[in-house]
Length: 449
Ligand code: PHE
Image (tube, rainbow, N blue to C red; front, side):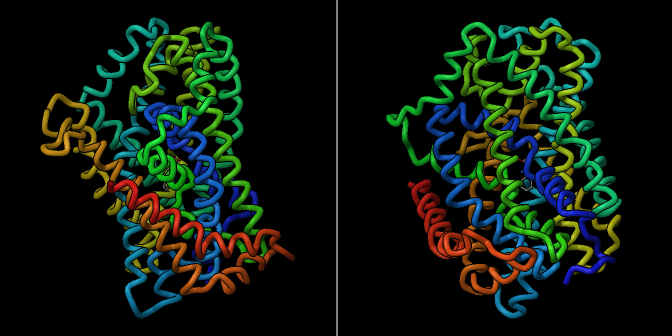
């Protein structure tokens, strides 16, 4: 069980902040808008919200309760409840998925770092909708710079993780959230008042059901898991540091609410601006990095806002990368008995190596830009493989494990430990046993055809 030597969150608000720190990150501000843009806007948003409510929320509670009950990393958690059998493989899958996501996530986080330096040195003042893409491509095409940024970002993550749970992670999370939110409000106002903003709003808010396809649904579900840091044990690990007497349903529901709110808000910033500048909403992973500098250039004090924004986004990314590395590190600490520092460093080294081909996806080496046969870039493949598939498969098995192996009645005892009652106990049990796993399988199977 969780002991104080292993580390605990200082307070409930500590858990909420740190878990939202994990959840809120590039997933909300970078990935959500471009994935929505590629999938027809409002229709995607609709399925995203449905996925959060019906599929992701039950899994979030399942993960956190599993973590708090066992006090372990994902591998240890499965082992603790089922020492025999292969359930621990789900934990291993989580550790590997975490490292893989971290490898390309850190590259994007490196972009935010680079954009922070560009903003602070006034490089954005001349950016417009017409040249935004060229500027972005020039930046990501500089392989040496990209590797440097990737390395710096991974080292920053190692630094926080090696300082330990409450002294490191929690402190970072506490300073970040409100600041990022305030700048987003300014951005929102600027974007909504740009000429032609309403076309963007229509794209974002009026679903066009004729565009319905399995891809929209699977991308929405994958995004829901990614955004809430589910399916790979991050919330098992963070739950393991949650104190026993705290109200788990309310803490986790706040996390889901914050995360969804920030993502939806990011869409309200990005799409009006994209349409007002005549840019393509399906512009891919560069979308946010192309449009935001344009908004800043059109804002009084844009240089200051821009620098602050990218700095805070960088920290938001950091609290997410910390949770990705924490899973693999907690595994090495608990199961391999390594020191925290060694665990973080070794895992970070592996991460960097896997990050290199993702960086090369933006170089002029054709192989990485368009892999043979599949024709997507290495980065595109990584993102699809680990975000959409590995997280969904992980979430499926976590739901099955909690629903049938550990049993939902036992899980409910843990869930309600710090609270008198859990209003949605019945709905949650049904979701975790039937609804969530069935929908995940359905969507995965659909995506194959
Ligand atoms: N949820 C994070 C984000 O939205 C990314 C993440 C995924 C973190 C999976 C941990 C685990 O940016």
